[in-house]
Length: 232
Image 1 (cartoon, helix red, strand yellow):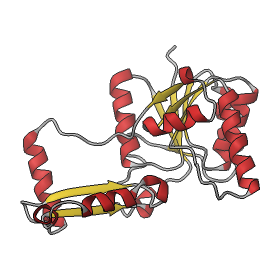
Image 2: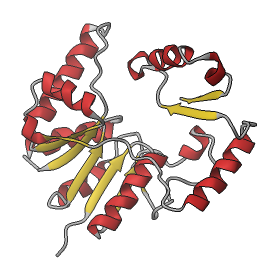
Image 3: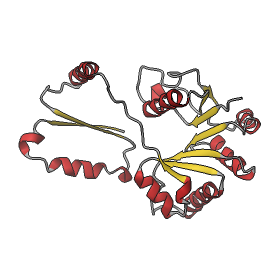
Image 4: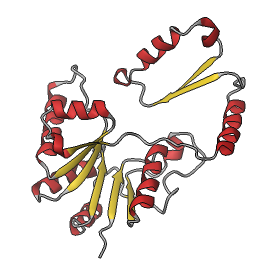
C-alpha cells in the first residue's frame, strides 16, 4: 500500500501550491494538505481560493488540536513534510516525532540570526533547532543561504537539501505575452518598461535595502524606464 504524503503548513501560498502541484505530477502520490488557517485570500487580498486550489484542504487550526495530532501519530508511517513551526500544533508535532523517533521532513527559511533576541526567545530558538537537529529529520532549506545557516548551527550536511521557492514559468510564449500585457495594463506600465518585482516579508534579512541601492545605480536612461513593485 502506497504511503500518503502529508504536507502541513500554516497557510496556503501561491509558490507552495506550485510546489505541491509539481510534487503530485512528479511522484503520482496521494497528497493530503493541511493548513492552520483557511482564509488566506483575505490576508493576501486575493480573489482566488488558494487553500482549496489543488484539492479540498484539511484545516487543523492554530489552537491545540488533539484530533489532528492523534491522526499524525496513528499515520506516522506515512510521509510528512512540515513547513516551519508557526503554531502550537506543529511545535508539538515536532516534539512528538522527536520522542518517538519518527522519520519526517522539515522545510525552513533562513534561520533567524537576529542578535537582539531576548534571552527567553534565544533559548527557545536554540532549543527548537537543537531538537530538529537531533530528530530523524531531513531538512530542506530555502536557498543556499539557508543551507549555510543550518550548517553553521551544526546540522549534518548529509541531512540538508536545498529546496528553493517555486515560481511560475511559461512554456507557451503566447500565454506569457498575453499575461504580460494584462499585468502592465493593471499597473499602468508602458510597454517599453523593465518591470522588477520582489515579494517577501519586509525585514532587514531579506535584503530590500540592497535591491533599492542597486537599482539606484542604474544609468538614468534605464532607470527612467524601470518600475519596481515590492510585495510584502
